[in-house]
Amino acid sequence: MPLYEPDSRYDAVIAGARVAGAATALLLARAGLRVLVVDPVERGRDTLSTHALMRGGVMQLSRWGLLDAVRDADTPRITRTTFHYEDESIAIPIEPHGDVDGLYAPRRTVLDTVLIDAAGVVVQNVHGSQREVRADVVIGADGVNSKVARILGASPTHRVPHSTASIYGYWKDIDLDGYHWYFGQGAAAGVIPTNHGESCVFVSLPPSRLLADRDRGLETVLLDVARSISPDFFLRLMASGATPKLRGFAGSPSLLREAAGAGWALVGDAGYFKDPLTAHGITDALIAAELLARAIVDGCGGSRTLDDALIDYQTQRDSLARGLLDVTSRIASLEWTIGEVKSFHRTLSREMKGEVEAIRSWDSTPAATRGAHRPAA
Image 1 (tube, helix red, strand yellow):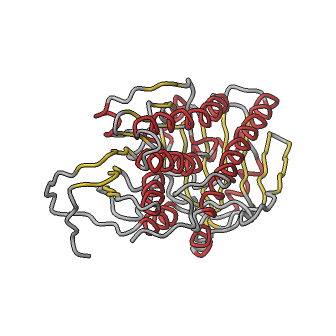
Image 2: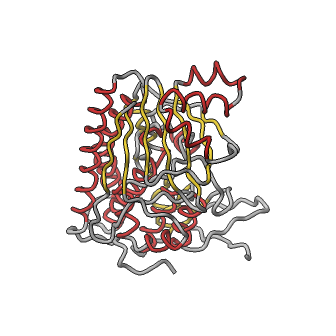
Image 3: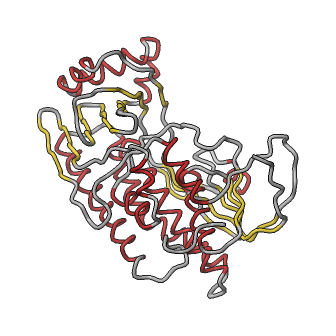
């Protein structure tokens, strides 16, 4: 691909071409804005992820006309979620609604590529030359350790005390269908079907336990945790064959950062990171991308100032995020009785329904970011 020499002026420059950055770029480009996305990582590289999309995330892909591309990549449809609380299992069917016929958990090699391809051409100057560009708004979509946030001095506005460590890998031929979430004393686990006939299997445990047991090896720790949570889960893992390559995640503090200021904004994990135990990060990113894109389009359209629109974006983001962040922290504490974690999941369900209602309200609100508008040139 020939190298592209950028123009000197844009409506928005976005640092980061993962889910949040690519989705924001897609919506702004469809609204007719000039957008430059920069990312040093090549298109479609895999990354740490739970992969799971909740209903709000699937709705976003459907509204933007991208759900078929995810399906066409052989992403399995999820029609049931099962919660395992020690000896009790509760199966919940995923009721179809409109084009949302189920849930999906695409690999990031699939989802990120679908989003960035829909946004337009990705170009990287491999020679490292520098060129100054200007924009009305600079957007940090560069992850939880965001350099943009650090440069701008974006401070945390809300922290929560709990986080988990995780061990995960991709198993073939696990005899389970749909999402499965396991909860036992002091630990949790999940099975998330994704592409290529594989399932992302993870266990979550206190970071101190992973640190203390790391010399025993990730496989030993994962299987010990699986056995302690659910003997049936452990036996299914053992029956599926050889343990795949495993990866560890030491955990990261959950927080909300300032998300907007004069001429800048943060989106995705750069502005809002939540423990992965509730597998809601991708859905949050897709929702926040539309909140931000709507604000920028509104601000650039002259109905109010861009800075006022960006501050309103932060207010709306926080309204949707705070409840989810707090209940996720309670679940991530791993210091609950089974009755308590059931109650937390009911709260989580109510918060997710609030997200769905917000998305549905956007369909009745005229906006230049809707998926029916023209694709980026």
